Image (cartoon, rainbow, N blue to C red; front, side, top):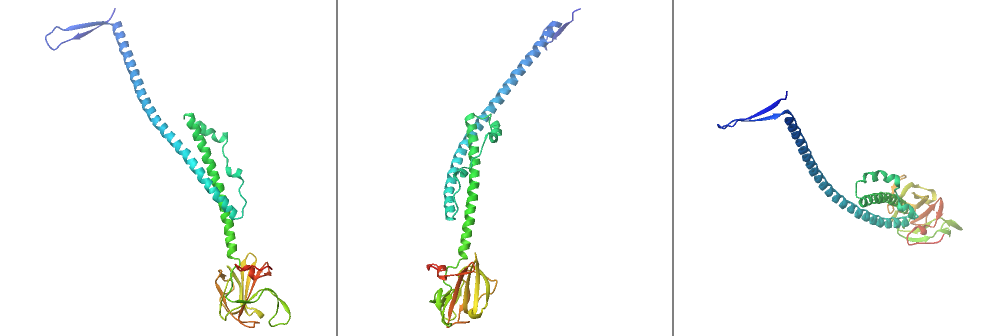
Length: 308
C-alpha cells in the first residue's frame, strides 16, 4: 500500500481550503534536491570565502615582498658602505703598524673569506619561497656581512697590537734619559781626563756640570730611586733605575730631595747642586749607565750627539 502525504493550505479569509498530495518518491526526491542544493550553496560560499582570504593574503604577501625587496636594497647599500669604511680603517691600520714598526698583514688574511656550501644550505632552504634573484642577493649580503665582521675583527686585533707596541715605545721613551739634569756649564767631559785633585789621566765616567750652589737637579727620565745617600768620594748622591737596563747617577749634591724606593718623573727635582765628597767647587757629576756600562751622557740629551 502506497503512503501519500497531504499538505493543507488554510487561508485566513473564507477562501476554500486547498490541499496538496505528495507521494513518498516525490518527497524523497524533493529532500534529496534540497540537500544537494544546500551542499552546492555551501561549497560555493566556502570557495568564495577562501578566495577572499587568499586574495587578502596575497595582498599582504605582496606588501611584505615589496618591503623585503626594499630591505634587500638597503642591505646592499649598507654592506657597500661598511666595506668602504673598513677600507678607510685598513689604511689607518697600515699606517699605525708602520709607525709601530710592525710588518703588514698578508692581504690574503685581510680578505677574511667565509662561506662554503655547507654554511648556506640551511639559509637556502629558508629562502626557497622567495624570488630567486632576491634570494641570491640575500645570500650574497649574508656572506659579505660575515666577511666584513671577520675583517673588522682582524683589523681590531691588528690595531690593538699596534697600540700595544706604541705604548711600549712611549713607556721606553718616558724612561730614557733625554734632558739636562741641571743648568750650568760643562767643565769636564766624558772619557779620559787630567784629574783635578789626583795626579795623572783617569777615566771620567760622566759629565761634570759647574752650577751655582743650591741649583735644582732633576731626574733625566721616569724611574725609581735605587739609593739616595752619602757615597764615599761622591758625597751626597742619587741613583735612579729607569728600567730597560738604564740608570742615571747624580753626585756631589748639597741636599737630597728623594728617598730610596721613590718613583720619580722626568723633570722632578731629586736634589740640589753642592760640593760634597771629593770636589773642588759646586758642580754636578752626572752619569748614564746601560747594562752596567757607562755611556756618554751627551748622547742622552736631546739636541746633543757625541760619538762614544
